[in-house]
Image (cartoon, rainbow, N blue to C red; front, top):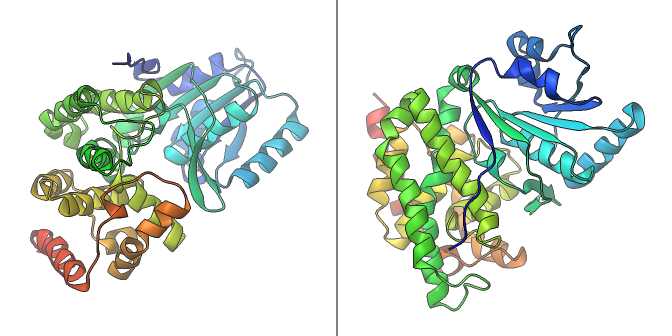
Length: 358
């Protein structure tokens, strides 16, 4: 079994203000408008007399590949050679930072997630959209990923706990992998019980410390990050094999995003996909909804700004979406979504959250 080599990750406090001293000029800070509007963050990147770097600020507004390439070219034309990229924010800022670093030929990259929503800081490829379809492209290894406890703890809890879904999806992924093997659809990745056992042990370690994660203690932060380190590195280490890490859950998310045109907090539609997938697989959906609710994650469509009809339409069109875009085989490729099943599933979902309505 391949050796997993996660990215260098530094835990501590007061890490933000150090980045200006280690970033070679000219340096681009890739972030989001809402974060950059906060003085508590903006002040940490201001140039001081004893440092050489004044950051060029790039706020992400699109994940479209063509748009990003044009805007990066504009930055180069205006400011000259870019020598450092810093990603500061959630998954979108992190992915664009990776994409920029790779597009520029591998310039030094530092990643600073502000919430633990996704394992993107620890993955080599960037999730970029081509004609509205998610593709994982590029190859970027950060010099370091910085986890500042105070920054993470200051993020809205609903963002941090949503990251649990990017590990809980191992649960549905392994069933999908076995199903693909049974249907001779595993492709380049024959089912590997040792790899499955390793991924399951990482998921179990997270579940064993779920209360710490839910409360975002230092131990909880480290626990979730360690699971992310594994997930991010494993994709490459196992030969670009997503099978141990994701399945129906993520494909449902991609299809939902494409159908609705909405950008979601990653973990919420993924968590809904995990629950739906586990129902289809008859794969302990009760455990899934227990974990999701314990983390305070509301997977009802209205909590994501969509409707149950959006979910139904996405499920009905999922097999075609997967085939057209050459995504991998999962339970969604063969499932039949009858009116009766869809109604029963809707009722089960909303019944599970009745106790949240009081």
